[in-house]
Amino acid sequence: WVTENVAGVGPPSHTFSQICKRGQHKQAIEPLAGILRDPNFICKGTDARLEFSTDWLLLADNNSVAVAPNTKRYFFDAGGSNFMDAMHFFVTTYRDRGITFDHIWVWEAQRRGVDEYWRDSPDELRAFWEPRLTFYDGVPVSANPGDAVNNPVNRVHQLCTEEDFCVFKLDIDTPSIERPLVQQLVAQADATRSSLDEFFFEHHVHGMMQAYGWASDVEGTFADSYNLFSQLRQLGVRAHSWI
Image (cartoon, rainbow, N blue to C red; front, side, top):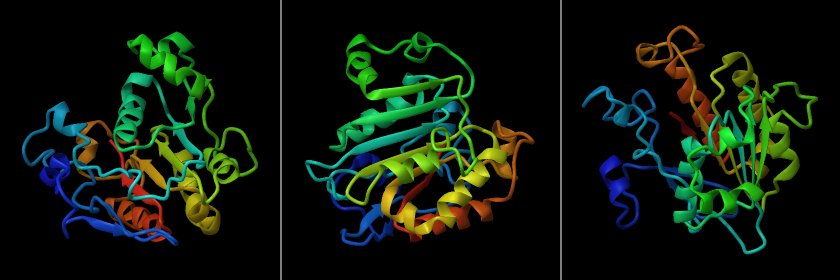
């Protein structure tokens, strides 16, 4: 499916999975397969290009989700060290797919400074996105259910409605906080179903990826990952493994 996804020609084939969400057409999404990364990684090489490839991910576009003119488009980024890293990929890819975010919230536990966050960003890019972005510099996300500000699950549930388009990326490399946040998404199924459209999560588990950066800071198995992403997809959330 990677070759087909990169080509981007015609409707996705039966190789892709489908997401069903109330009131919307069926949506295509990459299948849950292998170690939940680009299937060429390890099989065809272990260089950084393959390890951090995003060619295998199929994101939403303005045709696959209901994005009306008055719809709010929000992105919540838990673990955003530098705009030109993951965030640049997300805003560029979504914009190419017809979705431009109205606002982005970014939490970064290590204090970096605003200029460091925007380092290497072209002036035009920074001028467009900085007014749309709230950067919690040196502020870790919280898994406390009572935290209305720094628990990103609460923020999603509070700010997003069924008519909006909301994305949540969770990648803080801290299983003790990531696990309860994901559990909150699943446990509060009705709130998640009506507020969250797309979710990205690098679930660090025991297995092959321990030899490629995950080391011993892991929890669970790939079977747990499959179960987690499947549960969220069944709620209508486009849940993806992240890199």
